[in-house]
Length: 162
Image (cartoon, rainbow, N blue to C red):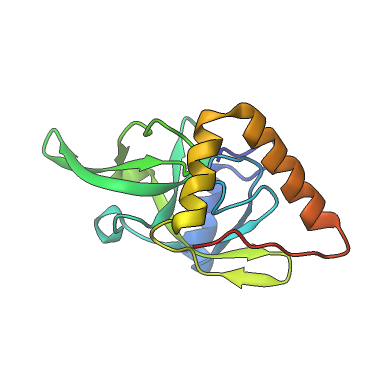
């Protein structure tokens, strides 16, 4: 999930995390469906790369943008630890994430009136939805319309989680 032109910069996120110990980020992208929906607010706590565990969702910077993706593997490149990340609804992993890029881990997801703790693994229903979203743009468009309708329909809340 990349930030939009109106979203905070990585430098602003890092400054806020260092001074306040927490950072809130509204999501606009769909790369982390079904775990994170467009419109959700991520509650980010600071973390160092060495403390990130596989399965956690982290916030990092790349090319002057903020990205929130799941850590799927730990690796080493040129003797330096790196993380491999990927959006839940993406088929291809991101380039390795190095320590200076890591800003924080997603502690909570705020969706409507609900506060969710992100699971480290996708449950069976979420895995099926992610698999379909990876392979069908039509399915993804329909899912996004459904989520938009559910989030505005008289406060209806539908959780595809775990």
